[in-house]
Image 1 (spheres, one colour):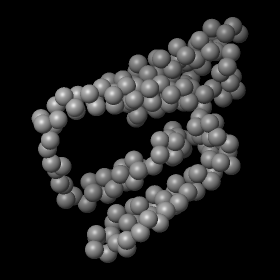
Image 2 (image 1 turned 120 degrees about the vertical axis):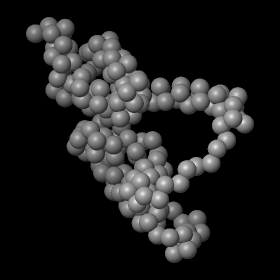
Image 3 (image 1 turned 180 degrees about the vertical axis):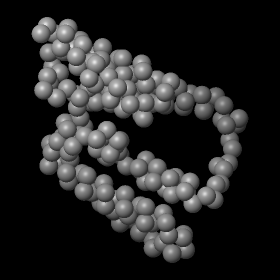
Image 4 (image 1 turned 135 degrees about the horizontal axis):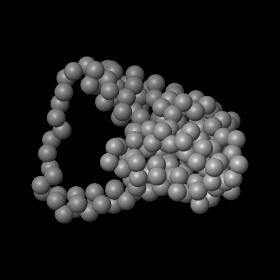
Length: 179
């Protein structure tokens, strides 16, 4: 088969997975654009795409494009925030529903991770990659990813247990590291 036919086959097989990946990271407004850009890059660098398992390479490319988009949006938001400082001040709304609190705690714990650690967790839990594939996407060895995942799980467990305790029951950490 020609490169064009192989690429078309790869696109048909993996486009939906890449679109879902980008959807979860940048939302519906930008997901299709990032997915399309991912396959544009894949076409331009087709000789570098592993033919036996292209999905981790596609995820890594989508991740880089997503991070660029997020950085651009963050810069834009920072400029807008500085221009609208007085208009954007408002208090956080409280919701006492237990499920919402648990969800917020989980998201806060996930957001407390570094970008690389969060990406490792999301690749394995949302994208269904195994440890070797996720390690390839984030650019580390399988053993490094395994150690990072162990530490991440321990840290998340600690954060979620701490979050579930009333503030008066929490022990001060005095600067101890969780990891």
